[in-house]
Length: 426
Image 1 (spheres, helix red, strand yellow):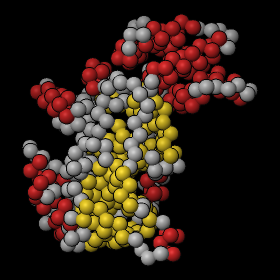
Image 2 (cartoon, helix red, strand yellow; image 1 turned 135 degrees about the vertical axis):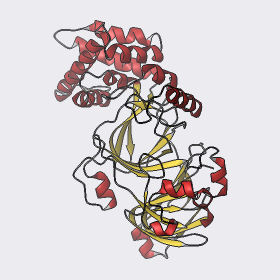
Image 3 (cartoon, one colour; image 1 turned 120 degrees about the vertical axis):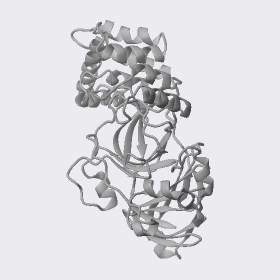
Image 4 (cartoon, one colour; image 1 turned 90 degrees about the vertical axis):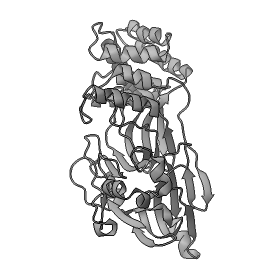
């Protein structure tokens, strides 16, 4: 069964006013449009275009709850032991401003935290709630814009020391050097990343010493000085990182996350590149348009660059303090124009299908086939396709999305343009 679905973008303040509308051929709302959710998550379940097709249900969550073996298939309906649920959530994400630094829990952490907060009587939608459901939340982001800017995971410590060395040189180049501010960061790093993050957040958000406040102020001043020196021809080794400091300071003045960002990999994805953010990975999207696919969860532990609630103890418990390069995810190429991104979790995999119109005009239309691993959602972001399964077919044009039940088996895509297909990972 092919069930047409739609939704309205969520108007978070950091969203772009036009990127999602431009991509999907919609009229902009005039407000920030941050995320278009395609899935059955209770926060914003997809609307069913023709409720009569599924017994009158108006959204995907209601239909799945009523007829899980039809909507999910017998295998996935029974695999979700407590409540049958779609295991993934597909989003179109447009960041016009930087998002908060954040990390997501493991299943065990989420389940324990969810139960404890329920026992404490904290409302699920309360601002100080850490765990809104008992599920983990790994995710990936596929860059749709020419560049997609992000912070992702703790960078190798030799690079952090290189940044500190450059800050020291910049400090010496000022009229009033303040080396002690940089000393404080280096001294805490000697105790490890966990100690450093703890200190930055605890002292930087209401601590009495004022040490982190001074450090943030000094780092921003040095980043500004670096821009001045670069204008005079000086070569700045970590120019991109210092430019990020300036950008974050403009959005979140005084926030300790400005310095924390220097400990993280600074990533510029090109269109078509993918990052995988496993549980425990600290990250923040800075700008750009992308397809985001994740486990169906809303558990977020924030770590700066936000006025919202930060639970330092829970964040430290969730964070993975391993250092290393940014976790790019390479695709498995299944054929001409067909790539699949499998991060190794059971919740989701992303298929990207791209067919060039110019090539198609010179040759017969190529059929691209994908065998489903469970229920799926497809969205067309350019051109148009005819999608056929074992028992039905559906035309899919730019901006349209469809939910596919697993009994359709192997899907055949014929057409030109671009389409994304989300389905379980196994």
